[in-house]
Length: 374
Image (cartoon, rainbow, N blue to C red; front, side, top):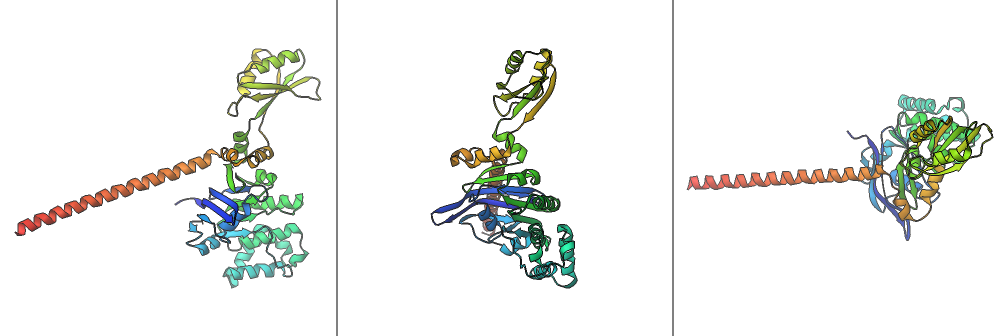
């Protein structure tokens, strides 16, 4: 049985002359927390609305928990818990009344409804405010109530659209921790433009820009793939000539540039090394060079580019450049699909050939039988 919980295939959406999405394809597997990242207007919310069957794509299709958005939209909705950017709450209700209302909408009554409400309240830590009016709650607790309504029917897939929008840092941290806990049991796709959320919450990052998917990787892989790392080398200053040390580091194989780095410690010499290409790891060569020249190595740190810089590189500039930065993960998905199609075609051809042989054998047997009768 496949562990793919969300699959988008060539999704496109146009509004008159405006193209909101163009050929977006990705997969989200069971147990993943995936950040769907992009600047405002990039197509994040459009994608979320398509996946939740709120709107239909102009072309392409998608499935959630094995249910196609066109063939089985009710199956999709049953498999989803959805928290839109504007949390859908009736603020004059008590928290308990609202959750009872949502449970009833989901078809639960009596003890079954109470069981689902208890479970949602426990998951979102709403026990202390269960008897309060929603309008009396802080923004953080309102988001918890919104999450509780998304969880009330215990869906295998959770889609959250800007869940930290408008929260202060403390409230955002609480919701972030809550999402991580939920992600241990469910598949979560988190739409946001906040890079901090993605780095601490998500296992994987999808980046969309101008309606096109331009990256699909883990946060660490994304930084490594998109930009060169740099290496901070700290050498004991005593007995070392700064100019000579710089020359030694510059002669290390794979080093493109050496830059002095200011430091408050007078007993240290600090340099930043830039590699010639992103796939070069300088650490072993640096250690060997310092040992060979009897330098005292006090520190060696590899620093990847920040996700902020990677995000800017992928979401600015022309579409062709960003499309060229697509990750190996999507290429592998495309290759796997092509191989599956080839296998299916070969199987169909073999079956047709077998059927043709059977037909010929049957014809020959029929002809032989006719001759015998004559």
